[in-house]
Structure formats: C-alpha cells, structure tokens
Length: 422
Ligand code: ATP
Ligand code: MG
Image 1 (tube, protein in one colour):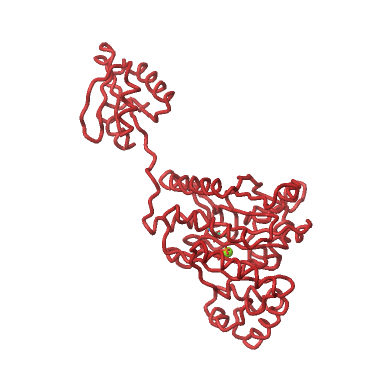
Image 2 (tube, rainbow, N blue to C red):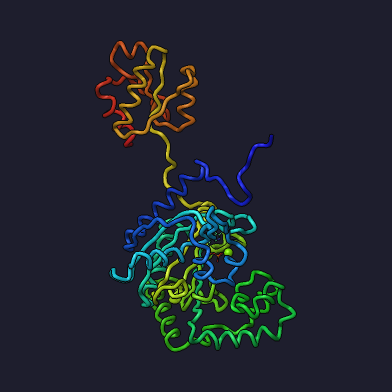
C-alpha cells in the first residue's frame, strides 16, 4: 500500500522552518501592540454567502478558488480564502460599532484557495491580517500602510516596493468603467478568453490579468485616478501626502486593483523582487462598502493581508536574520546505568528552573550520548555516573570548548544559569 501523502498544494512546516515562522509571528505581535491592534481568533469556515457577497461573485477567488462543501445538514460552507470578510462579519455580529472607532484588530492563520501550486503559491497558506473598522479617515489608510512597512523593516526586509492606487467609489467608478470598456472594447479580440469573459461582468479585473498580451494592452488603458470624484481625489491625495510625511517611498500604479466590487479608494501592495511571479508580500486597501454588501450598516474599513510563506521566502532570499535558532541549553548524560534515576530527577529539576534540557532514553553509550548532545546543539553536558553520585557532584562539560569541571550538585542550577548567560 502506498504511503498517504499530504494533498497537492499543502505543505508541512517542519522544525527547520517553523522557528522562522515563530520569529515572524513574534514580530507581528510586537508591531500590533505598538500600533494598538488586538488579536482575534476567527473561524476557519464560514457560510459560503459571506465570501460570495463580501469578496464579490466575479472575482477569481470566489469564481475559481474556494473550497466549498456541504455539511451534514446541507448548509453550504467555505474554508476561508481570506480574513477581511470574516473580520467585518465579526465586527457586525458583536455590535462593535458601539466601541471607540476605529476598532483595530488583527488575526493570523491558514487560508485556503484552490490555485495552481508553485513557489510562494499554495492551496493552504498563512496570512497575517490587520484591519481597522469604523473610520473613513485617510490617516487610517496611512496607519495601515505604515503598519506593514514597520513590520517589514523590523524583519530586516529590503528592496521592497510599495505600490498604491485609488479604485474610486460607486460614485466615480461607473464613469471610469465606461471609459475602460470603450478602450478595451476596441481591442476585444486581442484579450485572453478570461478577460473577454470579464469584459461585461467586471472589466476592472482585466487590469489585474497576469497574461502578457492583456498586460501589454492595459498599459495604455485609462487609469481610475483620472476619473476620481473630488472626495476620492482628496482622500488619495492625503494618503500620499501622509506617506511622504512618514518617509515611505511609493510608486503609483494605475493598473493596481483589488478584488473589486466592494473595495473603494486606496489599494496598495508591497512587492518583492525575490519572489518571481508571486511577488506580492502583502496587499490591502479600503473597503467602505463591504459591511453593507454582507447585510450590515455602512461601516468603512481599511486593512491588509500579508502572506507568511512569502515573507519567510523573501527573508531567506535576502539573508535576513531570524534571531537565534532555538536550541536546548543542557543535555544530561549518564555514565552508568545506576545513574539513570538520579539523571531523571536532575532533568526535571533543571526544567523546573525554566532551563531547556534533554536526555537520551534509549540506553546509548556515553560517547553516543555526547554526540547526541552536540547534534542538538546543547551548550553544556551534565554527566552523572557512580563517581559523581558518590561525591555529590556533576561533571559539567562545555561542548564548544571541550573543557569540563566538577560542580557540586547543590550549586549546579546556579552554575548552569551563569554559564548559559554568556
Ligand atoms: P496574488 O496576486 O499573488 O494571487 P492576491 O492578490 O490573490 O495575490 P491577496 O488576496 O491580496 O493576494 O492576499 C494577500 C497576500 O496573501 C498576498 O500578497 C500574498 O502574500 C498572500 N497569498 C495570496 N495567495 C496566496 C497563495 N495561494 N499562497 C501563498 N500566499 C498567498
Ligand atoms: Mg490570487
């Protein structure tokens, strides 16, 4: 019988890599505190309707990428492909409009999209999601963008490109949409079949097409920013002004759009050259009409989502520091079988002092135990045998220098603590 493997497009994050994730998540947690965002844990699955309406029926995510299933009572549920819609649902469901606005929340966890797996693109992947709900102030857009930049700076990422655009609002978008259709209509035959299909349903998605031919055509397309209403224009101006004020370098890209329909005004992405075709480390923007789209009152919001795999890949590519790789401090080694019981006790005592320590349970020779200690990158080996037991001491070996000395059993913990602090 063949060994059962994980499904296509999903991956195990093994100990070699998981400590790097922990470093990234730790940084994310710190930045969240600095910016005043609170963590929420949201469900992995939601009613399909939430995403269909929240993200928009004619987006790639909803049309092609969702993991949708019926539960045992025939309800249509979907594994979350992103977190924004869930965040807004959570805000509405818990009456958060009664709180001080904006309500600032973050969450992280696995997302699910049925995509073609490749480097930096998986069917289960992790996102860090940061959202501010209940304010339409451009300063909040700026806060969200600066949150992302702050985090990437803290992680030591360099050569990132911040790309911004405004996708307007229901007032100004229809005029633009028509101008875009007039332009694209004249090149209809040259578009890829997907974009021909998008022409009537959601022509703005053509701007986002990855097909080379379509990209070439869209280079000359009219841009939304030339059609913005006064309010959207002013909003975009203030966001850009704020970025300059904070020293955030950015580039405007008139073809940058998000999964549209309910997205409004600011759209942004942070790109990295390290990632090849999957070059977006994070994407975000404003979605003032999302709450209404899922049946709630008007609640403006802005946020971003960053892909954890892509952050780690970029950091690896740029040789960024992930901090010290976690290793145990101490390895307890038994020189004789008679020392086993004393070793067990010593092991637990060291652990009770919050010092990381391990030992061998398989009866290996002294030499093999010491080898195991170096494999685990322990700093010290605490050797216990008949001689040590009789004298009431432990032989402590510094595994880097090879030097060793006898330490009295009573002062051992202090000795270890002192040694590993250096
Ligand atoms: P892309 O253009 O790469 O498909 P997207 O616009 O679909 O990205 P968003 O929905 O904005 O992505 O998600 C935010 C972030 O989540 C992306 O910038 C990326 O870092 C990450 N991400 C999105 N899809 C995947 C995936 N399938 N695998 C790994 N990371 C992903
Ligand atoms: Mg995508």
